[in-house]
Amino acid sequence: MPNPTMRSTEPEFAAGTERPTKAHVVIIGNGALGLFLADELIERQVGSVVVVGPSHRDTGASQAAGAMLGCFGETTTESLRTDAARTRFELGVSAHDKWPETLRRLKEFAPSDRPLQTTTESHIILNSVGAELDTVNFAAMIDALDQYDKPWKEVAPNDIPGYNPRTESRALRAIHLPTEGAVDARGVLASLERRLRHGGAILLDQRVRKLVGSGEEVTAVELDDGHIIEAGNVVVAAGVHSESLVRTVFDVPELMPIFPGLGFAMIAKRTGGEPFTSVVRTPNRGFACGLHVVPQGGGLEYYGATNRLVHTISSVTWMADVRFLAQYSMQQLDERVASHEVMRWCSGNRPVTLDGFPLVGWMPLSGLYLMTGTYRDGFHCAPLLAEHVANELQGKSGIIDSLFQPMRRPVATRTVEWSIDEYVKHSLAAWFETGAQAAPQMTTSQIADYYRNMAVQAYEQLGADYALGPDILLYAQGNLHGARRVARYLRTIRGGGEVAQPAGASTGAGGTR
Amino acid sequence: MPVSQPSVADTVRRLVTEQLNLNGFGHELRPDEDLWRLGMTSLTCLGLMLSIEDTFEIELPEEALQDSTFRSINTISAAVKSSRK
Image 1 (cartoon, rainbow over the protein chains, first blue to last red):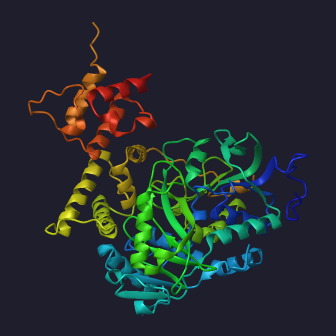
Image 2: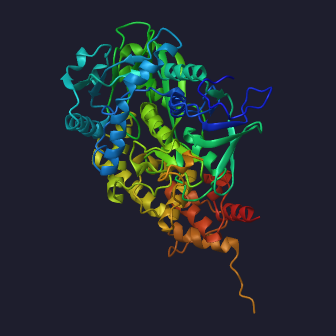
Image 3: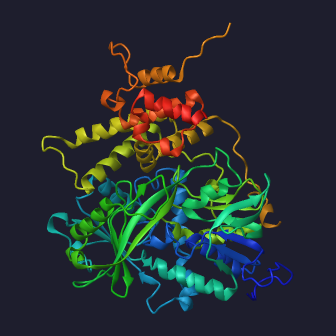
């Protein structure tokens, strides 16, 4: 395949095959992170770029994403509480500014007449369904908007286009965010693929079986049929598959675990009533991202999303999650949702790191770069991270904080006591949100006591002194596989051994091989 | 003169007794007795799993990480022996 941007001397592709045997950069993963990085590299004319990933993207997060371009809509009480969390939050703020130019780049490659940006605004509703956590996160959101001098205003919930909940679930407060919209995730991915092909990148509809190299460097990738592609640099951006891929060549106990955050959403066609014209969502809720609807254009609406940390990567959907999403969309967003026609079931796995922070940076093996762990806003952050990683691959200075180096010790943002308290708050939120019923004489504090005891016991049994996020704690205490992974990793890092240092992070050497 | 090693079942019994806090109740734990009926919870089972792996220096296979493996001293001992092979 001719490549107008490729250097003329290398790589040499094997004769008679479309598959290259060499590339300057091989990116493993064709989700938002991988494709945006490839696009950035092609734009910079760094040489040949190969992206490997199955075209169906089954189990991936990007293909199932709601792709809200929101960072303030995601704010919780934790977002700005510590320096590390604020650094993570500001990653989203910076990413937000990249999207206008990103969408301009992609517009001519859009696969249909439907706009890639499906709305430019959001409404956040505060109803009484989701317990105290909704209230404090709603307040934290307004506080963050003011701190960063972003526009918002309080609106009457009844005035939100399309919003038509059951009376008992109606919101009593709502705010309008005029600058937080959403994109059509699947349209953006398709546009990126078209633009990449046009620019000369090679997209291989395959999986990578393993990385190839010695104990000091990674030199190639081996595809699932044994085909080898030598690479100047290999970027692992394979979401929840990233950890196991890295372990094919660098299987060390201090590599931070990445858990699949299995989520479910639906894209449905409206059959009547007033359509939504903005993102309408609750604040982030118990262990998840809140209930939301995202206009998709063409009469379609995206309803999301559930989140459960699981042991096995799959694209299954739990019956309980279908019930949850369908029922609460009808009750809390629009009664007319009941007669919507489901056009697509979206199921994917968010890459959730043990400390909840992304893993972005050079690995100790020369030529190996890791780019994952973005949890629920990888899509939103992808254009920014692409610019950062492209810089680092070229040996230039990065544009994000070094906090996210992949071989770090887990970032500590809370005490164990705080973690237990957070777990109780999330559990209560989930209790009420899922419609659980207690005997009328049972008080909320009694339910809280039950969850508190669970959390205290979980820490005792795990022997953990690192304070976990509520989602990880829930997973570890309810799953023997999860418990073992968490306990072993924490034991490793507690051992106090030296954590391996990245090969190319300070010098950019990995990018100049 | 060789020192006799405790059997796998003896060690499992000790770990179960500690983990489920069964000492001092005059209860003679039978090897096939259902630990879930003796008050084991998902959380105490979690701790038991970790202590079994640590003590025997083994890694139980993925498929063994389920409730039935930890049902009794017998089932745990079988899993330990299988992992040691």
